Image 1 (cartoon, rainbow, N blue to C red):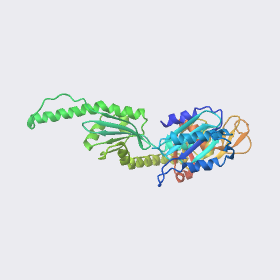
Image 2 (tube, rainbow, N blue to C red):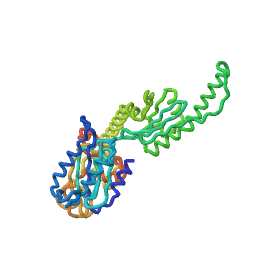
Image 3 (cartoon, rainbow, N blue to C red):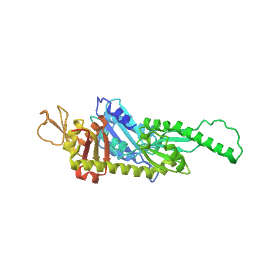
Image 4 (tube, rainbow, N blue to C red):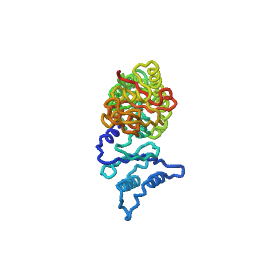
Length: 372
């Protein structure tokens, strides 16, 4: 789960500087990965890593880099396209993630883990619960980031029925019996779809099957599930997990674009009306730190540097003078995008990263508020 991944990283109490590394591990056209070139360039920034003896480093960062090399070579899941690694420089803590999506290569050392790129990647993907429906069985899957997280197949417990000769009244009775068996089956498994969606925190539901079966099955789903059905259609001929995801990829892309467009439309409308919304870094940071933000919007390529009060720890865009809230001194060079992402994650604020041109009107950042 995205929140659990971030909470695990955020909950670490650092006693040493933290090295945060994001690596593009995708296979290139020549069937090779190029991450080692990036790591070698990063090592060039630390000439003190050279040592007199193999596997012995004069500097703690050298030991971390060796540990990273070992994990990437031996423990990275080669089915994935990205890796995120967080490690204490001079300490024992080491947290590495094989990620389905590629990252832009980046390495930083700071007081806290750099979670912005991970939060961007997690926030750009939606989770769907897919139900493949026919009269013989129900197959339900949870899919996220191009892979199947969980899958189960349910079948009806068939009641014994006597052999009935075809035709006439007897044949009609058999048809009615089969229809009733299907109805009971659909009713009995509808809750399983909701339970899987709830346990995986699905953003939407997809029903696949014949028009008759999907329409009939939807009638037994709880209202809150029916309201979140984003697509119904026929299942692809090849119904393996990978085939299914490829088949639905255009649907997921369209749904994501539509939902983002509606959210942006609401945001800009409320900003123009000055109704429970903020725009720009100064006002948005203030409301976020006061716990008033419901959803935070940041441009995907946004970069913003500011200051933090060393006494009350408030973040500010201004860089001179003293803290206007407590009079404390200000620490310069603070990454406000990373700080805002960290605060939003800690407050369980919904976070959306959108195309830069969309947020040009609000200077790269804005928010919907819960209250004033």
